Every structure is written in structure tokens, then in C-alpha cells.
Image: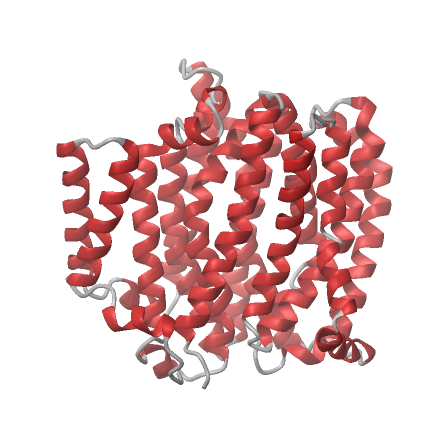
Amino acid sequence: MKKTLTFYSALFFLLLLLQRGSGVLIKIVLANGITPYEYGLISFVALSLPAMLQFITNFNFANILSHSVEGKKYFGFTIVATLIMVFSLSIILWVVKDLFFEYLNLPQEGWNFYYFVIIISLLSVGILADFIGLYTGLKLYALPGILATIPTIVRLLVIIYLIYTGVTSTFIILLVFALSNIVPLLLMFISHEQRKYLSLITTIHIPDRKIFVFGAAVFIIGAYPSIGQYIVKIVLSHEIGILWQGYYDVSLTLASLIMFALGTISYISIPEATDSNENDIYKLGGLADVTRGFFALTILFVIVLYFYSDYLVILLFSENYLAGARYVFILAIGFLFLYIQTFLANLNLSFTKDIKDYIVLGLMPIILLPFFFFLTQFMIIFFHEKGYDNGFLGAYISYTVLLIVLTLATVLYCKNRTPIRILFHKIDRMIISIAVTFLFITYFNPSPIAGIISGSLLFTFLAAGTGYINKTMILEVFSSTKK
């Protein structure tokens, strides 16, 4: 029997938890085995820079493929386009390499090697992203999560071995990050079941204007928060050094708890909405129920980070990284707004018939993107002059403000505000659940472990007991009922 959307959402969430949880464990192992400066350098070169440049090389190709009706016929085009973009960017990056790396304050003796790491990562991750987009559009929901998880598992195992044996060379660790991205591609080519999709590459269909603009809008909206993070990291690296970029990365690692829920909703909302009519999302265990459930989980993560971010950083990374916990709650607030914006924008893009909506919803993030650079730079200088240490707080304020601005702009523009009504259905019960949980932790002040466990249980019981979360939906994770 066919599993429900609730089941597949929970499955993808668990795979995302495994993927990002492994990524967090990698950072924990590294943070406890190398210096904060080396940690900042590795996280920046191996993760942040390739991920930022991947937005250029993959552009909206994977988002076009995620369209459940038309996406698969453009697979050949996306593979060719990705290869062309990677080749072009590799040439440009080689020409400006010295100037670019000097601006970022990267050590000069490693510039050529950093270039190699970035290009290998771009090529392998770019092709993998196209396959993930194809599987998403085909609604093979388990495969994208599995493919995205494999590189982090490989990295985790190899890096644990390296640190255990005393190998802490920055160059070797960077090479592990780059080459691990190739592993899922090799496994796909070995698998007879997956090789059958390679036949789709032989047919090249150029996307028409509507599907291209649709994919571009989805891409820009989805990429906005990540590109913003990378721009903030660049400003931090230039203004106050690579070390503080590393502290900011620790903050983002903690805040990634929230991204588990947000990532799942971003992943399922487009293929589900483009393959159904608007009423289908209200079915039991459908998109509305699933989205409210993950929204409640997002709020729970915000509560945990508000009370226990210091404890979590010391526990996971050591006191040397405590600066990364100081302002993480500010990021958590921004991600809460981002959850609302993402769901509202994705459903409007899925149901609209007007290409103007694609253009406007895509333009709003583009207009705001430069402010991640200029506002962050301004805020760092402003708070430094006001005596807030070196102005590190400014990075958090600017990032969160720009997430909130995009959310408000999306709410004001979108004619279909049904997604807002979905999230705020029985919101009074959610407010009660939040208030009781806050009062409980504040009044009893339990130890961190006891507080996280008891607060989470209390909040979940209240959210389900008061009816904000559909209780029967939880049981469907283990059922085989048809949607």
C-alpha cells in the first residue's frame, strides 16, 4: 500500500536529521581536534565557498526538475547546463583567484589547493543536485535524502579516523570534504536501478519561459537565506577575521536544528502542491497537517535555543567557541519568520497561473540580497563603535532583519494567504503551549538536560493535546494508508 505524505515527510526529516546531524558531528569532532582558526578555515573553504558558488553553477535547474508534472523532461538540459556553468566559473575563478582569496584573508600558501577543492566540490555536488531535483519531481522522496546523506556519513567516518590517529592536516581534511561528494555519484552509476534514469539525459528539451521563470523564482526564494549566510561570512572574514567567521558558523550549526523542519517543508511543498488542487492540502495527513506539525517543531527548537544555547555550544564544541552561542537566539527568530515566508511563497508559486507572480516573488529576494553585504558591514562598524566588542552582534542583527523584511514583503504581496491561515489555525492554542513551556522552564529552572527533555515533552503534549497538531497524523507515520 502507498505510504502517506506524513510518512514520507517524517522519513525525509529523519534522513535530513541524519545528514545534518552527521554534519554537526563532523564539526564537533573537528572543533575538538583542531584550533578555532583551523576550524574556521576548513568550514569556510570546504563548505561555505563551494555552497555559495553552487548557486551560480546550478541556478534554478534542480527546481525546474522538482515540478512533478513537467520537470523530468528537462533533465538532459540541466546536466549539460550544469557542466557548462561549472566549466565557465572555474575559468573565471582561476583568473580572479589571487585577488578573491586575498580579500577573504585566506593564507596564501594554500590558494591553489583551495581552488582545486572548490572546483571538485562544485562539479560533483552540481551533478548530484540535478539528480536530487529529478527524484524530487518524480516523488521518489526517499532517494534525495539518502543521496544527500551519503557524503556526510563518509566524511564523518574518515575524519573520526583521521583525528583519532592524530592526522590534523588542514590539506588532508579539505581533500576528504571534496572527494566525499563523489561517492553518491559512483553508487548511482553502479546501481542498475538508478542507471535507467540516465536515458533521460539523451533528450535535450530547453525549458519554456513559464517553467524557467517558475524554477528561477523557487530557486531564488529557497537560496535567499543561504546566500545571505555566505555573504555575511564573507563580510565577517574580511572585517574581523576568519576566526569570527568560524564562530558564526557554530551559531548556524546550532540554528540548523530549525532548518531540519524548514528543509523538509521546502522539499515537499512544491511537488505536492503542483500535483494537486488546492483543497487536497487539507486532507488528513496532507500538507496542511504536516506543515503545522513542523511549524510547532520549529517553535520548540527556538525555545530550546533561547534557554540552552550556551550549554549546547560548551557541550558540543567546548568553551573556546562560546562566542558562537552569544547571539544564536537572534538567528532562531529570523528562521521562524523564514518558515512562514517559505511556505507562503511556495504555495503561491505552485497555484498561481500568472507569470507576474513568479517574477515579483523572485525579484523581492534579489533586491534584498545586496543588503546582506552593506547592512552587515554597516552594523558591524556601528556596534563596534557603540562598544559591543568588535561588532560581531551586527552580523546577527542584519541577517535576521533581512529575513523578517522578506517575510513581511511576501505577506503583503501574496493574494492567496491561505498558507498563513493554515499555520495560524488554532494559533491561540500554540501561544498557550509556548507560554506554559516558558513559564515552566523559567520557574523551575531545571538542569539543561532535564530542561530540554521535560520542556520538549511538555510542549509536544500541549501542542497535540490542545489540537494545534493533529494527533491522528502522528500515527500515520507508521501506517500504510493511502493519501
